[in-house]
Every structure is written in C-alpha cells, then in structure tokens.
Image (cartoon, rainbow, N blue to C red; front, side):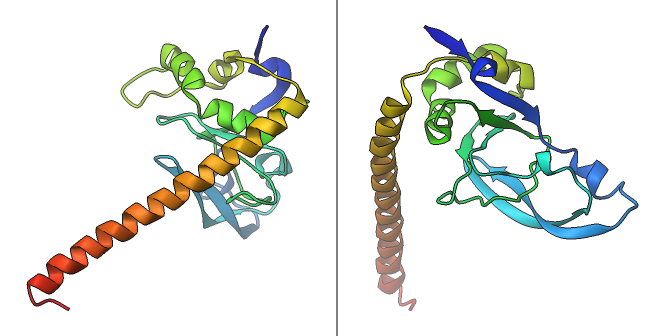
Length: 186
C-alpha cells in the first residue's frame, strides 16, 4: 500500500534567509548556509542571526529536499557531504522521517518515481513545487531491514558511478593534454 510522505515524516520549510541576515538587526554569527547547484549540494558561509531557530539547522537523520527544478534530496548523517548545523533556506524543505531510513527516503526522492509525481505538481518555467506537494508524494515503504539492504546496494552503485565520473574527467583531461602537446603547449 502506498503511503503519502506526510504520513511517514514531519515536513517543514527552511528559513527565510533575508529575514535572518540582511533584514536582521540583532547579533549575527558566521555560519554555513546550504545551497544547491543542479544536483550538487554545498555550503557557503553567511552572516546569520545568532538566535536562528535550531529547527532551521541540519540535524542527523534529516532529509533535505530542494523545491525548485531539478528537485533533489540529500540525507544528513555522519557520512554525508553536508554536516549537522548548516542553515537550510526556504528553497528547501526539511523532512524528518519517522520509522524510515533517511538514506532510503533521499534515494526515493531522487528517483524517477518521485520525479513523475513532481511533474504533475510543478508550476511555471522553473518548475517550482510547494511543501504541500512534497507532502502528497506517495511511495511504497518496505520494512526497515529491506530499506537498509537497498541502501547498501545503492551506496555501492553510487560509489561506482562516482569513480566512473572521475575516470571520465581524467580521460577528458588526458585527451586535452595530448591536443595541447600536439600544438606545442606545455
């Protein structure tokens, strides 16, 4: 039986960054803020209100999902690229899964199963979706043990994909080096 995301997770919008930075008159702190370019998450230091609510900071077990196209997700754990304590902006939703493996949920949200549903909800040229659209996403949720097994396989495949991309980049660089050398450029 399919379950909507809001039945298995608490979903909230990230912080309005302008409210906690430029428009904020109180004491500020240097803290990392989450960004996403295409499908790559990264952080950049920003001047953010010292009293920002901790609900807007990444926590272990969270899944962060981008609301604009391309919609992508990342889970926060000790092994993730994004650490705990990073400010999440209102361009993302913060998903706190209940009885669901966060890594499995992030992979589900990154799948064509989610993309096909999102396509029905998305609006405008930029293909923006809303928090309520995320809440309506429906998935089959296997047992926690099965989720863990799937995640182990997926992690191995992701490592292989990363290695293949790295090899491709090195081969492209090597090819360019050969062309440069043929033209007398060192």
